Length: 103
Image (cartoon, rainbow, N blue to C red; front, top):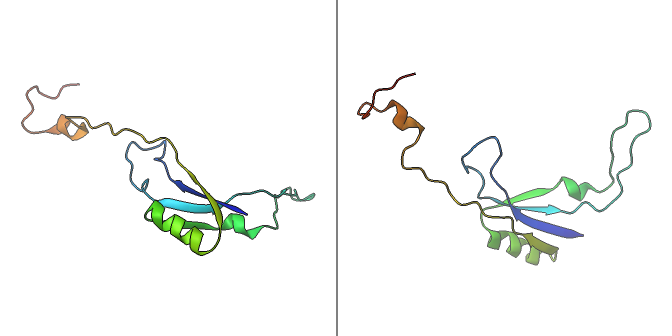
C-alpha cells in the first residue's frame, strides 16, 4: 500500500490561499470498486481509502510515514505566484479617493 503526501491547492472559487498551506497523507486507491446491483452504490472493502491525515509541514508527514514503515511518495504540485496588487477592492471606497466614485 502506497501513501501519497501532498499539499492542498487554493480553491477555484476564491482568490485567497487560506487553508492551502496544509499537507495531507492519503493512501492510493488500487482496488476494484464493485457497483451494487440494486441501488447502484459504489462499494469498497479497502477502508484505508477513507483515511486522510493532516500535517502542518511536509517534514512532519514524511516523519510519520517513515515511523510507521509506509511506502510513500511526495506529490509536489505547481506553486502559484502571489498576485499582490497595489490597490485592492477596498480602495474603491476609500474616503480620500483622488477621483469620486461614479457609476
